[in-house]
Length: 240
Figure 1 (cartoon, one colour):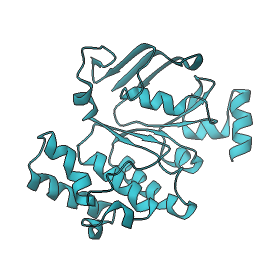
Figure 2: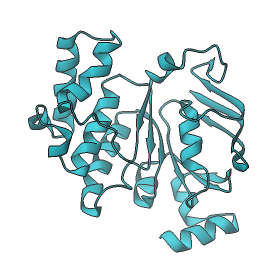
Figure 3: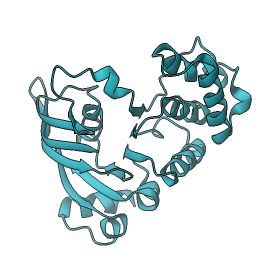
Figure 4: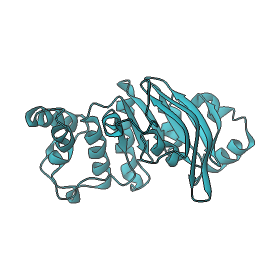
């Protein structure tokens, strides 16, 4: 579904991604872990061109999206993205936050979008918040709404950039529960996270990034039980 070939990203004189290549297949849950500054979030943000790669190729569903002639807004309709800090519109109700994009892009009528929004709100246990504003919600509730907003677009893949790192510890579980349920439906997911339990339980593959490269990749069982590279062994000794 996503093919990345020799991806480089440089910010001025900081070479953040150093030739990353990877394939994400339909239905996979790819979990990316690693120390701060390893390039994880930059890699994720390159997948839908929120960051423009310095060089390399990214293919999505057989289309070269790093080609400058591509309509990236159309591609992004199929790639849901959930950020650390929710990025909800504070002056709109929760219902409006969810229905705005599908209606504006003429993907659904207002009625269809509202019906879909209520179904999704039911799924994350927040139907009663439809008419509330983001300021009236907890961090965990805001993040669940951010996930719903992405799902309202019927994406083919969901990208998560450290979705629990801005939350109070007691709210982390409610967001991870929604992500696990989403994984069980067969959604293709790429998740940058510090939550090792989630990586172990939900991931089909776990990637370890450091210094702008993928240093190791394995199934969760092998990744945690038998790390091969010394840098990963050191990392796991500090986080587990």
